[in-house]
Amino acid sequence: YREVIKDLAVQHSALEHEVNDLKKQLAPLPNSSRWGNLNLLPRAGVGRESDIQHQREISESHKKYKAEIERAQAHVEKLQDSNKHLRQRIAEQEQNMRMQTIKFAQELDKAKSQGPLKITKVSDNEIQNQWKQLCFLVRQFVDNHLPRSLHFRAVEKSWARSSYAPMVLRAEFRHHLQSPMFCPVFLESLIWHCLYFEVFYPGAKSWAGRIGAKFIKQSQSILGKINTYLCGLDTRIAQFHDWRASSAAFIRQAAYNPATLEEAVVAGLSGVMESLVPPINSSAGTKSASQIQCDILEISHAAMELDSVLRISRADLKVFMTTMDKAPSNPKPFEFGFDFDHNLMQLTNTLPILESSLGVPDVVGLAISPGIVKYGTADGTRYDQWRVLAKLQAMSSAQ
Image (cartoon, rainbow, N blue to C red; front, side, top):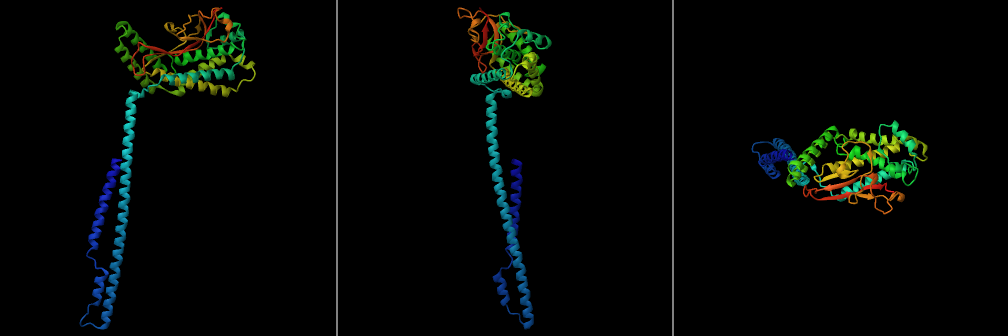
């Protein structure tokens, strides 16, 4: 904008000089009164015919000069109009430059408030709302596309053929697969198990590929050394999470390819579907394959968006599908049977017969959906405090 305004100003100055030069040239030209006076001057010693000829020449000269004056005046007016237009353009460009300056300053302030690499501060409510939406999509998928009853032997045979073995189902649940109350919960658990290891698991590759998985491994090693050798010094932990969040944001920008990385999540969910091919084919009212694939993509996208928010937050946000102190070190089938923790888990009362007679569950027989625990704040402080944003949805196997 400054270069444009500079060029317009040069044009404006040149036009001003041209107008002034024309005015100087027009000043000495005779006007109509002067030429009228000249017409009246006698010409001694010249006949009437020569007087007429002389008057004709004067008249023609007068017309000629008058036409030149009119053309010059028209040119001056044109130059003045152009000059006026240039002044308007200069004013508009200056206004645009002021607006752009204000906008840039606002964006700069916003970027500073977000921190380096646009690490936004997402509120707990936003995270919880995204989590609820993902839960809704999973539940809707089960209701729309999956059967209401299964035979464990058919499922077992399908798992034997499939490369994706979701979990080890405890014996006390197997005969309940034919129940329209338990079967949807079991299928929901299968999908969540897949999402956990393909998306929310710390070493999952869906957020930044192999580079992201290696970074998580190294950062966990660094945090372990801080806790071991520095006794969990608060300032060091805060510095670590600031570095972790900034690095995660940078790695995601550098390595993120949504089309490629989403394929792994879709493949995992499709693997769950393949493991249930016989039950799905034998059930009535299933949707078309294209609609199923569309819904799988929607679930994958929602899960990856939420996972990205969790990973680049300065708060330490953990997604867990088992006890917090015994998280699996490798993506492998779950075998449930860990203790039920009221602070971190919530019992799903789908099958009352599976609950303890005292109403207090002893162990988790089936984890339906993961939980989320938040350590610290989005500002990078108070890592000694924690809050449960979502409880692990569980089913007890106590009789």
